[in-house]
Image (cartoon, rainbow, N blue to C red):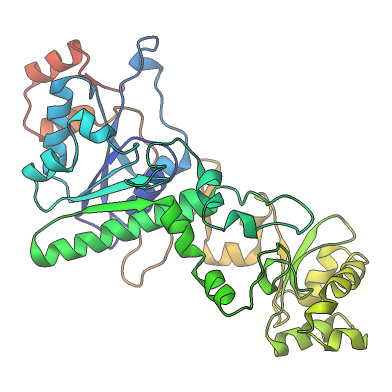
Length: 384
């Protein structure tokens, strides 16, 4: 693997949601990511476990250990002792009960950066409660601000909590702590909570609110669809355009290219007129097909783009020119991001559960008879 994190070793405790996505980001940047997977349950033989088919799981080495057995925990500690970063996404206290909390791990490896990913955080009244992305962003003000004014808040996929407020902040946190450890030789625990990250993403909106220029109502502000010049509109063919002509010069170009001469549109920032102007803009844009509007508006300073679905997006000329999407064995996926001047990140396919168990244990110095005993006792699992 190449990339700016080449030479960095990450141990990832198998989980769901933001933790795997953060591990993917680190792997995309060139880190060696070793995922400690659970053994298959008693009703499934290891032969039933084929390659993990989720694109998020790419770029890993997989070792399957039974962490309910002391020997499995000991093997995990040995792997963690040679790592720079550990990331885990369990409820607070789970890693401690397994014997893999920060104490024993950092006793073996004082430089270890111990990244913890949760929804509610390691502390607080909700820290032990179950939840998902939607619950976490509901508490931050983010969910309440998204959607149409006359409808319930709209779930923004799981981009704001899991990935934006979770995975990205975890990745930033552990890389920052790793940089700090490189200067003073001491690792530390990184408490990454989706509620904290999602709240952080709302900083600009809270700033606007503090100045009296943001309302709590949905679709009542400039960038939440309240303004007629910033929103999504349906075209004659049922497809959509995204308008974002905020700056006056961009707004003027939008009006000119759309041949809008109605003087009511001249008062761009008169908020009382926005609902009426939204209706007028919607009526105009419904008169032509999206493709026709794109010929007039796309690529200009009118700040207009087509709203593409996941089949259309990879085929767009700009996406193709930049290589924003790649196709491997018939599967289209987003390419690694961001780009770097001197290194080009590489990725490898998702591993099968336990695909690298033998390789990693042999690298730890275990003999073949020892490995055979571990397999016989189901302390480890090996993918064929």
